[in-house]
Image 1 (spheres, helix red, strand yellow):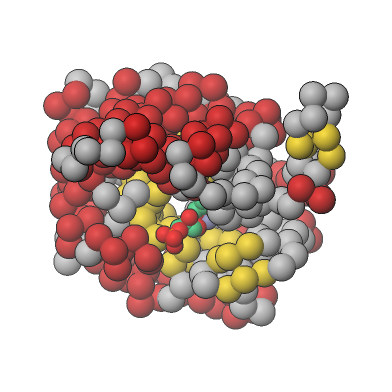
Image 2 (cartoon, rainbow, N blue to C red; image 1 turned 30 degrees about the vertical axis):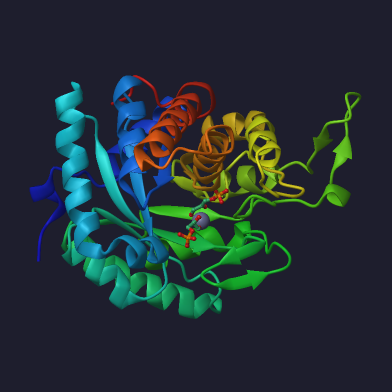
Length: 330
Ligand code: G3H
Ligand code: 13P
Ligand code: ZN
């Protein structure tokens, strides 16, 4: 058993309180390899932003749990070496069982998500409460979820959103003791968040997705004032990067994300944590495809993973500075 405190990590408690008061959101970037982690740390040190390093169950399987723990510990030391001891959270993304959350807590995670959103309401409460009791005994913070995002979550495909019901949030937060709540207001996971048929076109022919349900968010804020809200599925799917991918042999069709103006607006509300994974995948893939397409004789992975890391760092800095506003908050 290792405590996150020994690794130099932070839980989300003080970070969310500061983010809520300061009207910004903390980036939660998923990672599963060294280049992604280096890019996240470089970007957040250079912008002096706190950061949540997010690990999904799939990432845990891919990278190995022991490797991940040492990578996170390495990230803390790397940030110091780069000149800024930014707060770093190691968070389990979409935990689907008590056992998985416990394993992560026992191996040095400072925060876990228990996603019982697909369960009947009372079962979601019971599971979340059980995780909260174990986590809080170890000073680890817990994110719960109410409402279901369209798309793929926990290997379950939901065709339509089930928006979070504002009438449930106060009861859920009170009965479970969670530290933050993920909600469903129209975002979804992955690179195809909307079909072109769901969008309208502006005067320049650009597809505009249906707006997020900020009315639901406002209702939720009224029921649980000051409580930290989490937005999943918040990639914006940059069209210039999709074009690089498709111009270099890729086939990402109808990839549409959440407009950054909406995410900027969300970050100034009770939304304290914004989850971004797909945009990182897209940035990395664009850079790798471009190098391999233009330099077909290249076979040193550093020659394509290096540019991928640079592209990722630029993307993360942009999110911090222009979307989430978490710069200079470390
Ligand atoms: O919410 C899902 C995250 O993007 C993680 O995705 O399970 O493929 O690692 P993954
Ligand atoms: P995106 O697929 O929009 O990046 O969302 C990631 C996420 O919510 C991880 O939990
Ligand atoms: Zn998610």
